[in-house]
Length: 142
Image (tube, rainbow, N blue to C red; front, side, top):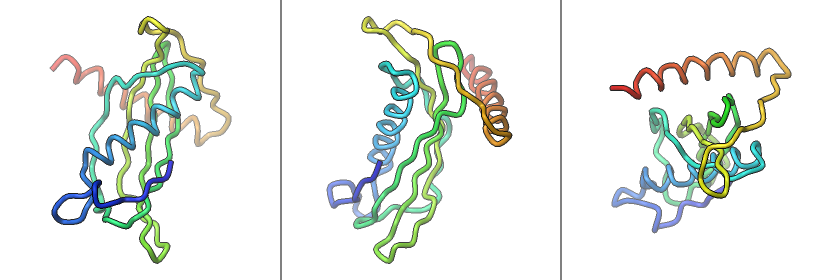
């Protein structure tokens, strides 16, 4: 997904509102989840999100979502956000992990297709996602 940061997306300092960027992240993750599941998917949670660099008025924002883990009805989506300045320089502005649940027309969870792990890099990414999932489940009770 690509977005141009316009004045209505920025605060008094000319940087993008965090909520606006998170909205874009949520949309990109939702599209990614829906494409994988071939069904409607809804946001269940976001892990910690840390803005590494400010995104400024006039920057082009590149947002890429990737499925990193699937369970029975849920999946984790990694979303990377890069800012591109007018000179063409791209830098990572943030990375976020979102959990989505696949639902039927009544909003009830339904199974998602498994994720194919074709390479060692895919398997390593899955393993890291499993650790994040365990942490999320442990923190849910707090």
